Image 1: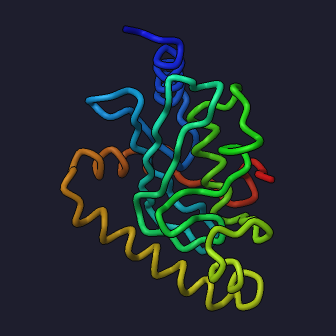
Image 2: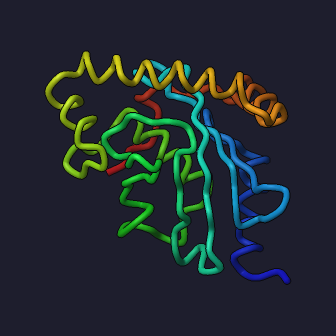
Length: 183
């Protein structure tokens, strides 16, 4: 049965395929259009540069009226990412609008990587280091970036790796100055 949320997700997927934003990719799983896998590449000229980060998106039948549940599957050290990978981002919570699509969600998360909101920390250590000891923060981020490479090399889904390599080639991550702003 095709519901309004499933039709919307098909449109979101078609848009993502026809006009992919730089540095992000995503697609529904083969089994369920309500569950997506995505990859965000770390923006250029940021501590996250060259990172390849996997995410999962779970949509309810209330989408697009309610936001999806989005989590990093890859290990992440960031002021606005909880230990379980959940993301503290206003557009995924109280600032959600049905006009946001999957591309907007992914590009907003990519922007958040280099533009964290330390006033709303999900990871207090990351927030403290970001504000008080940027060098140590960037060392921890670099370790996460390197882990992201190993996770892809060790990944059991070679198709995902090949798709991600193709997405990176076709859509390199933008520099932080060209990414849309997130409040």
